[in-house]
Structures are given as structure tokens and as C-alpha cells.
Length: 211
Image 1: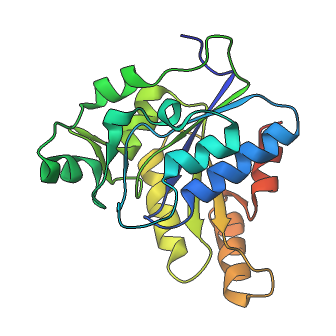
Image 2: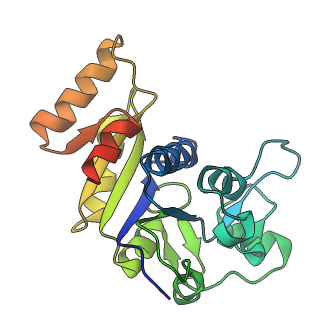
């Protein structure tokens, strides 16, 4: 198996902060810049009554891959819970962290950037014996993008996420950032200036960190 030249973990401070949206936009940006990109979402849970595309389908559309390559079918859990809980509710086994890591494969001819999207927040259960933090650590990613909401409560959430991910290098992406919103600006400045974190407010800014 050929490891991507740059392996990026995509984590969130919570669920619904926009990890998949950010991953897909980043992939599109990189592909537009003539970089080869592959995305992986090792496990995904979803509401089958929701007509929206699954995370794997969204990522596949952005990278030009097959959804089953992004997330192999055994990792699809049609119950909106953390994967281990969804698996238990369905009466199905949930893989161990080692099995999840072993199941992540990349194109044989290699890619410039590999994106691995986790589930929920940094400490959200992902495997039978591990969480999102454990996955990016086990993979030895080169960089983590921590996707966070730009509004109220984000300073605590970002600090907690960055602390949990240490010593991995982290870029904080404040999603849905509005320059006209005073709180958004203050949150960005606090995290960047007082906490000394690498903070971006858009996918273009994060893509620039990748060179």
C-alpha cells in the first residue's frame, strides 16, 4: 500500500460542525490545483430516512472516487449514533482500532494528499476500543485540521480538542466564519493571539498550509 505524500486527519470539536463539508471543499480545492487527492471515512453512521447523501458519497463526489472506496460497505451503519453504538443497535460487530487502521487503503499509484475524516468530536467513540483521537494517532497523520464552529463556546471546545490531540500538529478551521460577526472575530483573535494556535477561517486558508 502506498501512503499519501501528505496524510491529513480531519477531526471536529463536535458533531455537525462541518467536517465533511470542509473535507469535500478542501479536496475540490486541491484537485483544482492539480493535486491528486483521496479521502477516507473508515466508518460512518447515518439516518436512512434522511435523503441527504452520506458522508462517503459527499467525499467521493469531491475526489472522483467510488463511495465504497471512501468507506467500505461493512462500515456503513444506518443508525445515527456513534459507530460502536450503531453496530450494537444493529446487532453487528464493530471493528477494533487495529482493524480500522488495517482497512484503510490508498490508490496503488499513490496520491499527493490523503484525507481521513473521523466521526463526531475528538473523543467520540469510533471503533470498538478507540475514538477519533486514537485513529489519527494510530495512523501517524502529518497534520490534523480541527473543524470548529466559529460562534459561542468554541474557545473551550477548541482548547479541549487541541489538548487531546497533542502532540500532533493542528490547524484550527473556524467553519461558517463571518467577518462581520464581532463574536466570530473575537474568538479567532483569542485563539490565535492568546492561545498561539494556527487558526484559519476558510478552506483556502487551510489549503495554503499544505503548500
